[in-house]
Length: 409
Image (cartoon, rainbow, N blue to C red):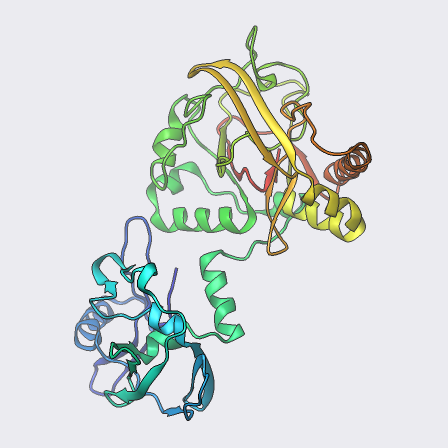
């Protein structure tokens, strides 16, 4: 994921001048560089390497103007390149980059909370190194120095904060049956062989919450090798990898040949599995064996738009989810309380839905229970809307990867 954009300029002398570094951090590659507009010739690769070595420490020079200090100021206000910016004094002191306050090798803050003064003021502020560094002398004589480039990437303006939020969490894109049918489907061999293909798979998985992989060999145990290319496998009381087949005397309805209702897996876990992968090894040639799939984010947003009262009820009423029985890990009894639709800052972050594993214990009033069941029924109608739900059949060799906190299946 790039931290900045990359700019190289070819000089008349044949050299390439480096202006900005783009850092890509992936599972296997720490730094990756690309040139804009020049292709990928071997000669340019040499220029890039030389330019990087020569210009790694090059920084922009900024024009900085400080606003006069006033009594009671809680922010430092300065103009950088003719743009006025404000930085809370408490934030600046908390993020001091000196060795006493910050451990650079681990990127970790060292300031002790019990000695931190959130009401601190400063004695003086000045720019050094030709407008590249901001130097603050605090009221307790401590000195903090900040590179202007570092501050600009963390300033408190709405546009920069939006960029930071999009970096922390890639914006999600909702989808329906038409989008699912038209989506690019990577092959298993490409994902195992290509870092670029794997990156795009992870990118799409975070953006859309689902990716259908084709062409995997039909043998048990294959998923482990694939998943361990980019993550770790989460152990639950059902183990790490399990086979979904019809089992006699099972403690889970997924191991029966009865209709499996739309659900998310393991809502009775506080730390709910984030991504599930279903590998189709054997498919029934009859009309059975079909799969239902839908974007829970799209469904929740549609419910909010068409029936905001039902959305409010399902996002605010605590429900007890439970699972009890025995499996490969022994006996289990799981309990967790959480709404059907979980929100953070008004945004849907998780869907809990499992008709078999919703406890009969319901700690609400009679009127609240009636409203909740009505809201759940209306949500169910949205889930089965043909514009929302995908009805399809996995092929042998398909792997369906999906976000279990978002995608209902």
